[in-house]
Image 1 (cartoon, helix red, strand yellow):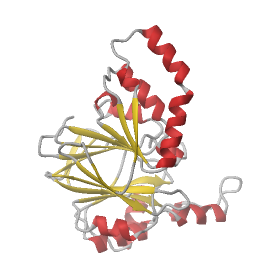
Image 2 (image 1 turned 90 degrees about the vertical axis):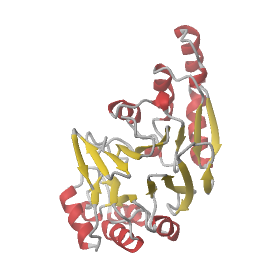
Image 3 (image 1 turned 60 degrees about the vertical axis):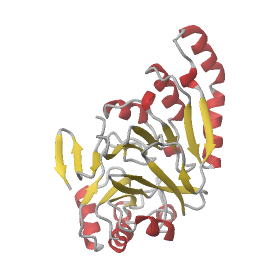
Image 4 (image 1 turned 180 degrees about the horizontal axis):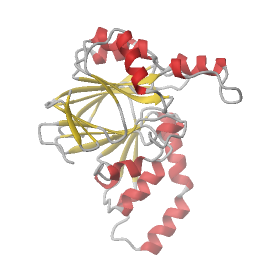
Length: 297
């Protein structure tokens, strides 16, 4: 589905996290406006989810990876190759912080021989789609995205540094994407009055200690660099966001009804969307499209 010229569309391709989930693919989101399509992160299953969303890697104008964690970049090379098989005929533009760039360069270089064999043997019309232009992501606006304005801002996901959130703006409005982070002033500032805040969430009430899987120390450590439902609710309330959507659910199999209750108990009373893979949100019409349904929010 292609958005109208004046629309800003945000599609949840993968709303999961490192644990394997049949319901939620790895972190990946698509934003579209003014004929420009930008992919945010490329977690496990992103190529399949793009096709399921009626899109394709061949049509992506840029990939932005928010930070180094494996669940946000593990399918990078699969994305490159699958997009070439779809007929991509231009180099990839990839923006990421330096540590993530190093990882993706490593993926790309590891398959150099495989790539050479494919090009020589498959004799496709053009090999340009397998080329990648790597750019280091910094704070500030990202140039060259047409009618879609994207500004990166630093968030706090220490010890993974740097990590970024994104402000996504078009004539239709402004969406703020938190990235992975603990609560930080930069996110609070970016979120002020936005039409939609898309925020990560660590549902600590649904992360019990499990022998051999995670200790109390594990839970405390992971919780320390994410945001709990109470923290997210407070952020959304203070920032005066017009709507709140949750993604990167930890754990991916969380009870979403219980999560909704925690957000409400935390004091946020506005429109609330628990993200699901392939859910699409559109501004300015404030439409949610998913699984054949269209709902206003």
